[in-house]
Length: 192
Image 1 (cartoon, helix red, strand yellow):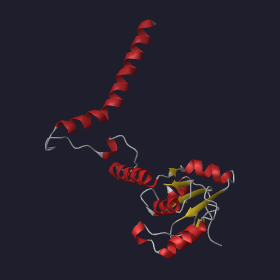
Image 2 (image 1 turned 120 degrees about the vertical axis):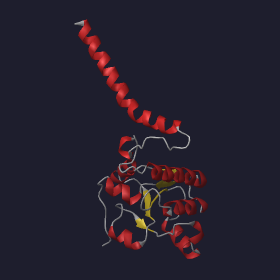
Image 3 (image 1 turned 90 degrees about the vertical axis):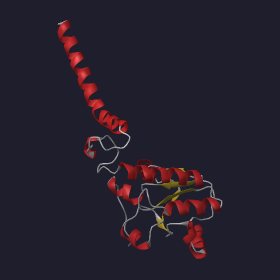
Image 4 (image 1 turned 90 degrees about the horizontal axis):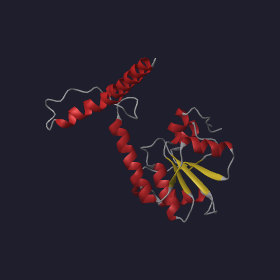
């Protein structure tokens, strides 16, 4: 009986080592070769990762861009799931969709207002800035949640920067935007 348990533990340990070491060994062998000429070709599907389609570099680039933007803007982030909880609880906040009106009219997070912004601060006109600040209201301590289309989109960052510059103290960016909201299959509204 003890021999059977010992065999089962040994077999399980071997499987775990092989399973965990498979992709790591391929990566290690690729790293061992300086020029890569002798490195075995590794299929993206064989590597561990976040992406479903093998575009891990794109995810990393978007992540790094987001981290730099948050550091620059000194605002907070909120996940799709946490934003959904706030929407469901009908918390006192302003949700701002910074996408073009055509996108907003098609679908937006319930309760969101539209205040279209360009992709970079340099493109913001004085009129856009004024209209955007007006859409935020007068309560500088109210929670302001901004979103755009997806993690790599910069419109919500532009909005967060303008809000912070205008003295709003509770500025939060939803980086996943309407793309993450819809992917999570949360309800959307359309313009009436």
